[in-house]
Amino acid sequence: MTVLGSGSWGTALTILLARNGHSVTLIGRNKNELAEMQATRRNGHYLPTFEIPGSVRFASFDHEPTDVEMTIVAVPSSAVRQIVGSVLGNHPLVVVASKGLETDTGKSMCEVVSETLADAEVGILSGPNLAVEIARGIPTVAVAAFPQSTSRDRVREAFTSKSFRVSTTDDVIGVELAGALKNVLAIGAGMSDGLGFGDNTKGAFLSRGLMEMARLGLVMGARMETFLGPAGVGDLFATAASRLSRNYRLGRALGEGRSLSQALEELGQVAEGAPTSHAASLLALRHGVEMPVFAAVAAVLSGRVQPVQAVGMLMERTSSMGDFL
Image (cartoon, rainbow, N blue to C red; front, side, top):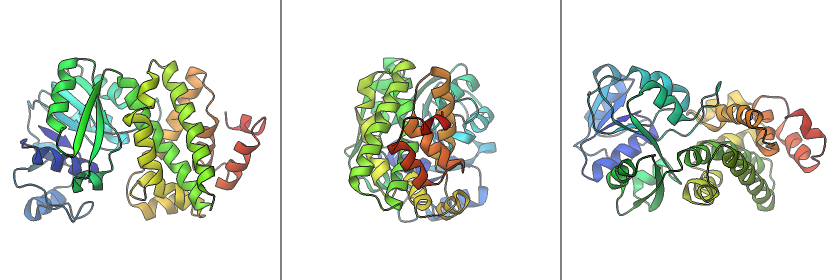
């Protein structure tokens, strides 16, 4: 099997799969970094303290293996269409591990991959899965969502270990939306903490946001139980409360007064919630779903209001939020 993406998430999944006894090739863009990873068995930039098992092979996108049985996509959502469109050979089963929405279209990553690899069986793996904790072997769960039960079972068997339990569902759109939209809420949770508000504020914000996320999902054909399970509430709580979360850290920096460009520079990694906030606004408008919490985060990220103003508008929401929708 191959893992597309040699960042923290792709590396963590590679380590997990290799520990499970699978033959894995980790594919990346930077040949110098890949050579260093090959020599040191470490991802020095993202996960420097974790050894990459000796069975893992490394390759760049122009020397990737072809005709693999399982392909895991773990690149930023903004790069999925380009990266997947450049892969060679046959990829019959594709596991999307990227959490986001295509910015300009609002399409899910499974939709993007399916458009690019028309003959592939495409689904998603998602849950409360912070990369560092996966590499540490800290117990957690995930959900594999595929249309076909045989594909769900294959992915579950490949990823399941003593510290990583995988359940299955056919609610692909629900799992995708939950994984993508919770990143926007995690930015808002970080803003709340950065502004110095308490747990009451954050709890109110996240509960309202979860309701909006589920409301959109139901209109798009998802099931409520997905948003109440590990791919929904579980992933939301992990991402919105942990300092390991890039989206939380981005939001906290914004709440503390940094600009978006300053916060992203300090972060040094992609925070998927930022572009996803724009895509979420597109979906809300397209499906006629009112999502004021998401609109408030999007307004801050676009520079239209300051974080404290967004909180005030949410608290006084009758007419002010009309400016966001």
